[in-house]
Image 1 (cartoon, rainbow, N blue to C red):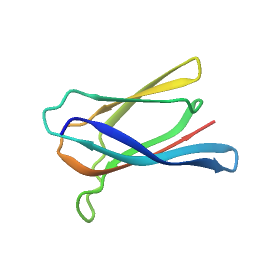
Image 2 (cartoon, rainbow, N blue to C red):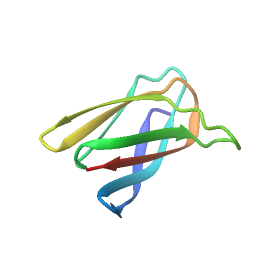
Image 3 (cartoon, one colour):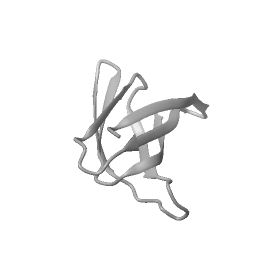
Length: 89
C-alpha cells in the first residue's frame, strides 16, 4: 500500500485555515508527498491511528512556492488508519 492522502475537511478556525484527512503508508515505501494550496503552515501533524494509544508520528518536511505547500512524509511504518491536520495562515 503506497503512501496516499485524502482531504476530508477544510475550513477556517479563528485566524487560521485548516486541512484535515486520512493517509496510508507501508513499511519500505519511498517518502510520500502531498501538495495543498493552503498558505504558510504553522502546524503540521501526521499520525498513526491504527491502534489505541498509537500516536507514532512520522517526520514531515515542507516547502512553499507560489502558494502551494508540498509536504514530504518520511513514513517508516505500516499505516492503514493515518490522520493528518494542517493549520496555516
